[in-house]
Amino acid sequence: MSTVVNTGVIYTETVVHAAPAEFVADAPYQLAIVSLDGGGRLTARITGERVKIGDKVELAETRNGTEFFRLAAPSGHGSV
Image (cartoon, rainbow, N blue to C red):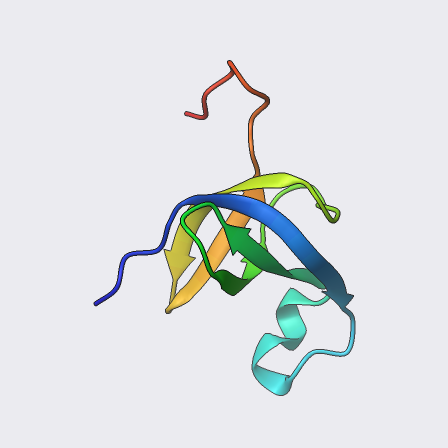
């Protein structure tokens, strides 16, 4: 099992309004491609406030094999 780097920057993002059947209850929701600080990119869901290209994000949780990232706390204000 691989380990996901837990921080990165938003490379691109979109909001899904017309979701596949298994995710209809979640719509609308934000998806993003995260450029990981350790290299590589990952498609992930966004939780919490909406992010934009260039925003710093951190891994919030992994649920059913899907990584959920959130806007990172400003420098000097570590997350809980």
